[in-house]
Length: 484
Image 1 (cartoon, rainbow, N blue to C red):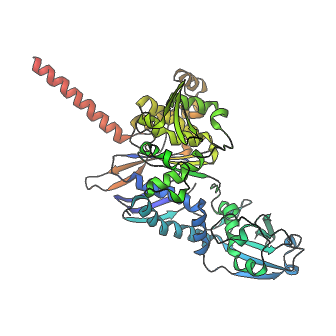
Image 2: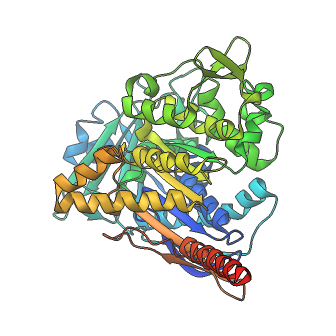
Image 3: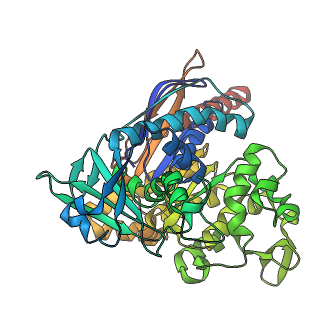
């Protein structure tokens, strides 16, 4: 992801930039607005994967012109595709227009999202950088693409996306005939219960659905190549363990009926669909030995949902305990665990506040391994943290990655001694580390810490540790003076 947030003002944060990487860590003192930043990053992804927001992007595009073209006058490369119809409609979409609309929706809707999530809107002045003004397709950059569509016999709506190359020759990106259902519905929905071949009038009225379908499936990838709209987003706020206490009463509610404030509702909307479904496409826990070993070492047991009684239980050997009766560490881990078990990890993006919450330092190190493993499996992880143990462990995983490049045998010896698996090592190119530095005026500047052979330097943690060591030394010296 090449997106860069340019923060002129966000709460206490002034004049800072943050570039998203697959594994992004936000750390620093409390009350430095790390959470505000995490929420902004989360909402960026929502803009790209949320159907309702995609609709707003289409509606915010500059005036969309639909041309009617006789199929006989089409370019030769398109004639065969539309040979059975007389009239074809065409939309021309400029990359610059799509970019501007995406940014406009992100910035304008972000305020509403803060209000929904927190019942509060911080001081907010952001800009977005690094989104290109051209589509990238077949190793070429083009200013615009053309979407041709038609009511095609009994197959519903048939469309083709094309562009002209540097020699002005029409090139087909793809042809698709799968949207019979989507043309009949209100813009913004993704399914229709009764697919029908649309009438000519409906066809002309709902051309934006063609654009929505193409946008969701193909066009985003031409503008932002490494975004996958098939990703699932998971928002894990602080104190999620206490929300799990409420879960039995809401486990089978639809997201729209969840009777709680925004921050809880958003968490449950992203988490409940998988946690409350007895149908698992793929049980990662059974198939992934590394994941299973990691989770067993963290939980020292298993968490299961009884879909008959609508209860969540923690199993440890032959002991079966209701989730309400478990330690806070188990409850904090439960949502992440249940989501990781279901379906491919590579299609998941996690936004986690303090993943180390309520865990012993030994287990905080295990959490660092788990997060690194998710990223190495193709998922993405964005976290805030106050844990020096977690940050230092990630720092060591980066150091070992560099050491392995220089001397595999020495790296393997260290990994064997400390039981660190290859899958936990972190390529520094995947890692973004940002320290939220607060000055005497209570203003915050976000400082990027670039990973190196020395790892990552958690200066705020080191400062506190140095003060603690100094305090301990002063106390010892005071005792020595008293005894004299």
